[in-house]
Length: 436
Image (cartoon, rainbow, N blue to C red; front, side):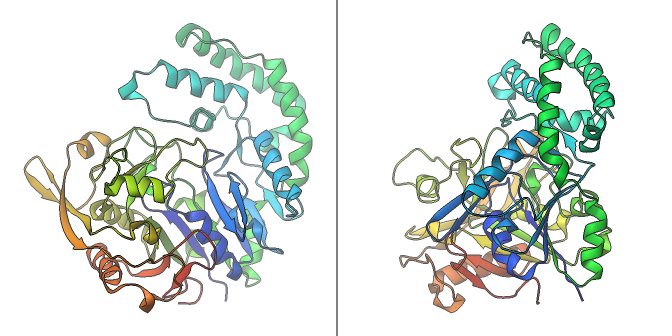
């Protein structure tokens, strides 16, 4: 009988989902991206090679595994084409194994123009920290029911008519409200028609393909992008992404029923990071040399895969994880980057917040209340030994095991996997999501 696993980030993204999806793909017949766009950045280290993926599912590194881009993804075809070409130039066959839903909303040139112009118009404190890649405006068009979708590319006249209608509206906003340059509809149309020829051979009924694979007994792996605390409904709004990043979106964003989701694996770093604006209760100074925050930043190589921006770093946050667990219905946790904490004399865990004089044990809804939260910390001893590359739980230093046990007890979710480095083999397995 097939067993299907959903992998989601439980923090503000960048938790190391790509490595874990790649590692779990050994037991999967198909891997599915179900939300987000090319603002996602999943880095895979395989031997001496490093691969940065944005749209192509991380399971692509395994021969014979089918890869799917579900209807919940907003798609920049030009970027997808470039990503495919880079992978195939490295000897990885993609086109024969990749299927794209005809329901994906398209990201076109005017979406990125709007994204950049809006962010530039905001004051420093109000900037969301978007990647400027057009993801937000594309999702807005989708919700406003004016999106151009992949299947529209099969009807050029209809596509052109909808495009001109859209640009009548968006160019008005760009020029009259944001003070930016107008976008030429003919240039966008010409580019879209070229890109259409590249994507058409990949288009398939993803929902039907997933159902058929599941009926045939093939395991499915659903790969989330960003993180739960960036979810447009449940994150630190408005400092969020434009899609639902939670486990439930795996069903809606790929066209399957929730009954087909059997195990939810939450990926979390052994500490916390965040890129861009928004509140961050357990944040540390990453610039002062010799401090824990600086070690997390430098040893953890905490720079955005897509933007290159330095990530903000902080202590592990239990109330944030409890909120994520509640929203996603986590079955188990995977702790990543444990080795980054090697050598710190002591560690802190944020166990609760003080908010308006009261103690709260879960992250509040919305950025305004989160910004008022004062972290309450518990201090634990660190460890001097290296944990890098260890593959057995008992081989970890006693204080490292105690640190993980305390996280497990406070969060009330079992730790099933521990990652001790970026490579596939640098993984400790306690319970396998596809077997346990």
